[in-house]
Image (cartoon, rainbow, N blue to C red):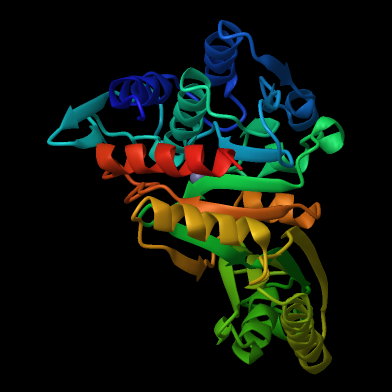
Length: 368
Ligand SMILES: [Zn+2]
């Protein structure tokens, strides 16, 4: 059986340690202390210096005690703000934060479940294949830990990520690729009262381009949004520069590129009509994840849910996670719902029952 008391205290200890993105060292040190006293092989990779953080990813290798291919389990150590000085409160089987902070169940519930599953297998002497535990940094700020993770010493070809909302039994198998988009319009400044006809308004250019764009929901798997507009100055000057930043996402790479090209062509048309010029750039932030229906990992997860009487729900999501990065590296990957609720808000909570179910499901997936 899962040791519920220990699981809760592991979780509470973790959420009390401050760990905004790039400052996860407290959690990394805590995990190293906890695992090294049990004799595990722990390594911190070079992601920290590479991304300007105070620690790298924590990678734990657990030697096989039974047959089967190696498998990895992953959760991220960083939290979104406000996440300093979190004081968890347990009442009626639910854990919340006392003050005006998030709880940090995203993703410390994932870390706690992985640790408890491992301790359970070890104490009950349940055989398992070689395991890798990947505790990443800087997921929330753009999955920079996962992007810099050193895979050369990780022999697992399958990764179970514990970082999705929804009931335990939720299995995320699809997540879109995302591109960041920046477009800057260049007009010509002129005195707005004396000779405005000599100017080209960058704001007008931007308005004409944006009014031509298909945005928001494009189709069932493609979305686009402009999130910010910056530029201009005093009202008596025709503005010569305005910058818009946005993003597009799609499950299908060709659709993502088509949407980006559509947005660029709207800019072309605007400057053809009104003069001026523009710079347009996009950067793919992360690749899509798309687990095939015949995936062995997915089948084992469904089987494990069934054995534990969990209602399995195989789903897609519109958000990204470390799972996208692992999938992009060619690993077989699923992202599990761990019951964390109202994440990224100060109303975040998690039920103890869900912590326990996550640990049970993880322990089951660690066995072959
Ligand atoms: Zn998360």
